[in-house]
Length: 307
Image (cartoon, rainbow, N blue to C red; front, side):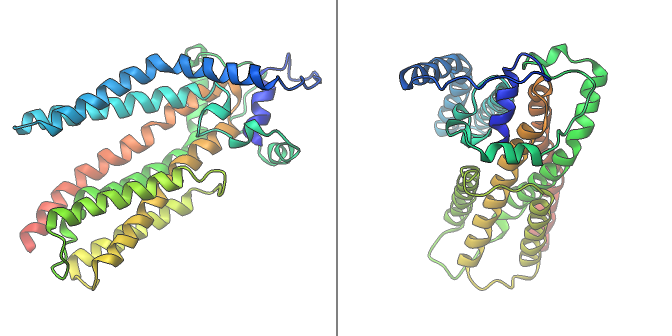
């Protein structure tokens, strides 16, 4: 759809010229390009994978807090490096190879022109459309202009991650029910599993559901935070299974906000700005998580003292 239309513009000779659509490559050539792209990703995947594997080993066999914290650091390196690298590379690779860009790239059709016409570029500059290149070629003024245009998407994503990680870091341990066979530790693990299941499902839902106004997701996530904070304070929920549903819903909102934010940016930024836009927006989840940790951990200790 819109992302596929953008990728077609990327390979045109100039903005003003009409180009004759190239015939579709034979299936064998298409598959060959796919595997070349896969091989090209391997070195970047390897670094992130080694850090991730190292984090699992350190935490699993740890006998001290320091070793466990080192494992957490390696996990953060893996996540941060992989995220900013892969999202930036969406400006260079076909969208069939990357989940966060247009899923219709393998099936071009008339629908893409309609969406492309409906979407106006998020960032407008006087520079002509060009092939995607390194973001290092952008001037400081261009970067600032692009960043200001991205705030419409960055701010709600920060709010979503702030609210959901405030719940995860500050409230999960306090949402404890006695009227169940699950121990305290088991309840906490179920919360984490359901949250991640919701995130996984909604991040994989781009073919089925697309959301343009991510501010709505930020508002709903904040309502989740207020509701669960009220339950920790007053204890009015009668069953842990209600909390299970709310946490699954929390994960669905978080995953949907993430994937739709980057999909919308991919559609609405010009080719020359897309790499920088993707990388710059990566600060959203990190900033939201960091802010939530600063506030949630002291609140957690305060609530523990009250109880």
